[in-house]
Image (cartoon, rainbow, N blue to C red):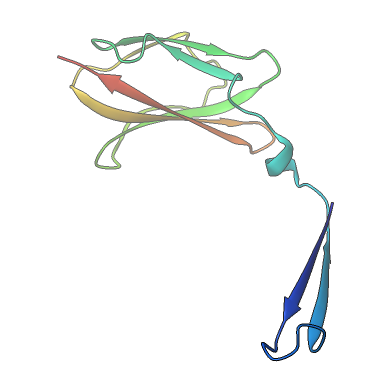
Length: 113
């Protein structure tokens, strides 16, 4: 992609003192990824029992669940991720998965009581 910006540095004469700036680059891997469909946690919110569906293209290396205080309440680095997650306490949690390439996927989950 290319971005071109003309910046006028003088208010007196619109034809004077222009600076032409051209930025060039390409999309990065992070920019190009659409991660919305790769992880699904449902039902969300729930009363503590969640189903986890991970796209088969993802090789999960580890999974962690954090509560709203930032404390890790679940952790699994076996590469074998259960398709069900049970959380006892009411609250907001962040499910974090990391794949073998180092990509990180996050999903908020809510437990009701």
